[in-house]
Image (cartoon, rainbow, N blue to C red; front, side, top):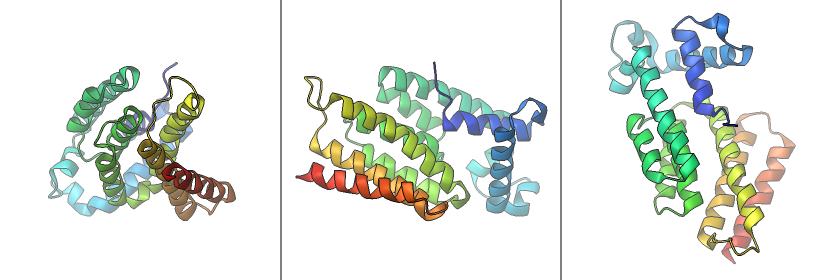
Length: 211
């Protein structure tokens, strides 16, 4: 069964809000849609209603049909990338939505998993883009945790087997990134003890990987 990614949930929310298809949306989708709108309005203000925000990416958001088309195509590329571990498919998704942190995060996670050389650059891009929209911080932390926990589960299963081919560098990056996202969620979203404990655990795991 294909999982419903965070990007797809946001796309559904955007469609629900902008295309007035609220009746067909779940309560969660409507809540996300409202959060998206409030954050977007905060970023663009009244300029959004004057026809231009001064930013081509933001201006594109005034045309929901084009936004949804790009998201659909990018999702298709990213789904193929995940299924086949194909970084080139993921690059196509990023090119369609270069200022969307969700695709930067996905390609970074995939690059880390397959030991592609540019994963740190893509994680840095995701951080930068997410920081420009602080109202999305919780979504960003949750998605980073979800994606990297899947890689960590595979990593753990393969340790000590003939298929284990993770390098120490991958190990450091994986646990370091996980620690970062748990700390980010702890900072922004309620100071959960479990998030703090996971942050400390993965920070220690990253240090062990360096040895």
